[in-house]
Length: 171
Image 1 (cartoon, rainbow, N blue to C red):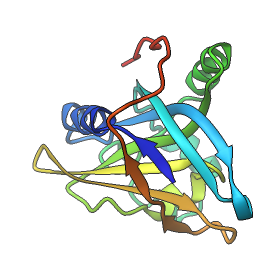
Image 2: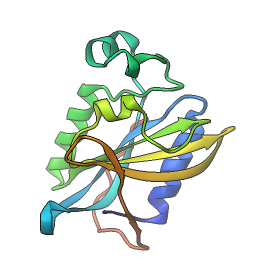
Image 3: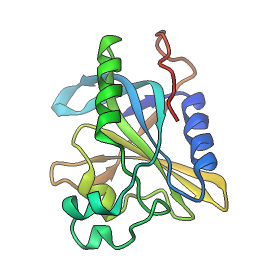
Image 4: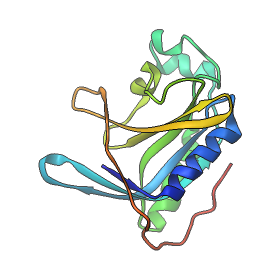
């Protein structure tokens, strides 16, 4: 389960609208707690908006042909590994972890694509914002199961977040 606030949802939707008609992407920072039966509870503390660094040449080396059929920032996103490591390092210095990734689907449903699945990591939450004609319409959250297939992951929306110094948001 992903615990987050209305402000987190608004921030993801605003980033998705600013990036339209291209996909936006960013990282979710917070705390990960493993519960019973290996179920995890993720407490979102803050979001880090990143640039979509999608590059078809990089994708060709990583993905199957089905996942690379649309090679455009309008249908794909990529987080530069250097940015991922930078954010991970800064988060660890503040006793936080990367607990997930968010991105948008311009003029498409908030449902993971084959490319999303192929690049997904276990234990992360994947929040997807559907943006219709430039306006955020829906947000759904997903997590991988043991067979590396996406399943809906519940969200718990709270009015309070853990107190922490905010990391500057990169755009």
